[in-house]
Amino acid sequence: MHYVITGFGCAGYYAAKTIREHDPDGKITVFSEHPYAPYNPMLTTYYVAGKIPFEALFPFGDLEQIRDELKLDLQTGRHVTKVHASEKTVELDDGDRVTYDRLLLATGASAFAPRFEGLDPAEAFYMRTVEDALKLKETLDTGTYRTALVVGASMVGIKVVELLNNRGIETTMADMAQKIFPLAAYDDVAAEIEARIREKGVHTALGCALQRVEKTENGYRCFLSDGSVTDAELIVLCIGTRANASLVDPAEIKVGRGIVVDDRMETSAPDVYAAGDCSEGHELQSSQNMIIGLWANAAHQGTTAGANMTGTTAEFSGNFLHNITHFMDMDFIGFGDNRLEGEVLTSGNIHEGLFVKAVLQDRRLVGVNILDNYRISGAIKNYLYRIMEGSAKELSPVQKGILIKEGLRPSFIEKLEGYTDESR
Image (tube, rainbow, N blue to C red):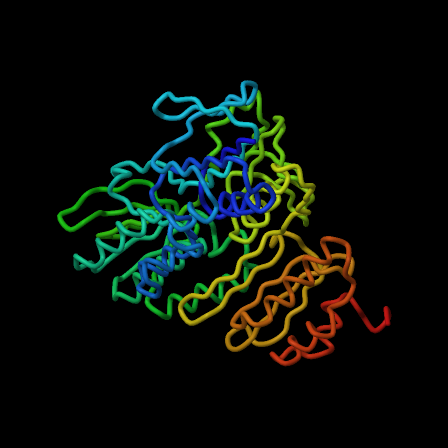
């Protein structure tokens, strides 16, 4: 059996590892565009900030060690440009074609940024790949900068803002969205976070699009859609990502925002699987197919794909939207779709200490924001996951114990579970 994996990030690694566990003798060919071992894109800002060494970007270890342990035909610097599913071949950038028995598409996602008038894309900075991190770190380490503009009020954007702010660089964060973390934070929680980062010297320009840029002697003059102008010696674009799905023919393999897969990670083409940030898997809360760009999600999908590629039956029921991040001496955790409305519960003081905001529909938890206590995130995440699977009505005794220990009152926990005095 010849297995081909295109892309060697988290999903590709776990698929290769699982294939080798089930098929010790099968041939596994891996095509990777870059020369690095699988790395976690979310750790790039930690490296640039000096919080972790370069080696810590690679959680599975050295590339040669991985190749030897998994007995891979590992071909780095080679890019698959097209999948010919009807012929069961992949086409490489040098024109070569390779035949497969089973194929995994694990091509991930790339940083996306529209073109801005006056700004050469090569002169802007991004934060997704190892190359992005090396470029920004070298620039910051070898030059002196006073001002910067970060476009994108995202989880990545705030980490870039933090590392620039820590270097004493006067930084403006701009976004078309009206608030920070628009896909995760409730309005009042976002407003509190914005107030806190402004107190630390960060300028915010939310609800403002970057329209055009003019070069100046020291950098750039940036014109925003609200009519304001800000000067920046560095511009970092953290606007979002797009699935790397252009290698497939939509006439052969179904594609939405990403490559559509079922719970076995199978695409619409026989013997072709997809996993990780390039794929649209099952999102539990909406029951829709959706790209869920999370490390753990890619790991589960890769493991599931690898098992099924060898003929073993495995399913991954799906995941839901969640974000956990620490920045500027605060924690933010967002679970569920923040657009859903319902009964609102709060606990704590939003301005200091643990604060929880939860939304219930029909006495069923659908979304949570947590400020300043990551320790309760695991218990609530697990509980919400089990709700979406349809297997939970109450928190477990251990989960309740964790929440109480961290400061949540038993009466609030009962409400979180959907209980009222009448329902008791």
